[in-house]
Image (tube, rainbow, N blue to C red):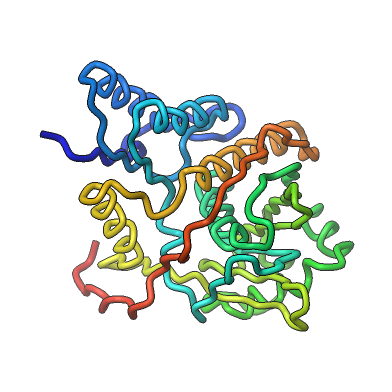
Amino acid sequence: AVDGVVLIGEHGDYPTNAKGQKLYPRYELYREVVDVFEASGRSVPVFCDKHLSTEWDKAVWMVEQTERHGYRLLTGSVQPLSWRRPPLEFDIGTPVTHALTTFHGHKEHYGFHALEMLQCMVERRAGGETGVAAVHCLEGAPVWEWTDGSDWAPPLLEHALRRSDTVKPGRPRDNCSEPILFLLEYGSGLQGACYILNGHLSDRGFAARVEGVADPVSTQVYAQNVRPFGHHAGTVHYIEELVLTGTAAWPPQRTLLTTGTLEALMDSSYEGNVRLETPHLKVAYDPPPGSRFQGEPPPLEDEVPL
């Protein structure tokens, strides 16, 4: 008998579309799983790695099947479960007004991680999650033009970069030949930003402004990028919990919202870096009671070469 499905649809050589989205067959594989549920009259919990699809309608369909067939869906990546240095967690109802992440890597592949890191933090804000109203992807010199004109981003960027162990000497605008900036306008009024700063750093940071708190709060989100890659342990744990107990540690709507936000940002980039309103991203959900990031120290590094 099958007690659960683990779907990691990214191993292989897949094409990239005109917008720069890698066409991983996650939706297609997921659809085959649902076909079996329909044919057998039985469903089991499903884990689907990273963002759901490159297309919003397909991602919505994937989440809707959980209600139709009565199973739990766990989605997303290791990012929300990685270590936080220091261990920052907002209480539910914290009045976060602005938030920012610093990241590295490919615009889409790692852009999802940057967005997910932002989302798992800000979903705990006062009023709960109600969705994203508009997005804007900036690339190149406009990143710094926007930053220089912002009344909130520069101090948060500075605090996030202070948490980095890999930041290079000098200014990010001098070290990054192709900076990328994701801007998010949430329906609640929250302002969010994700900086992808290849050439300036190779780790991940977060900073936020909380109403009534004088200084920004910040943390490094640490990934152990050598064997045994301990940051994946949290995902493994919650997959096991999903299969054994039938409970999902966080709602799939988090990944649904992040999936749609990423697609809209890729559209913004493809259409000439224009601001796009996103009325379809009115995704409301309650965050899990706890953030569930790892608290124990990382395991010792394995000296066996890859």
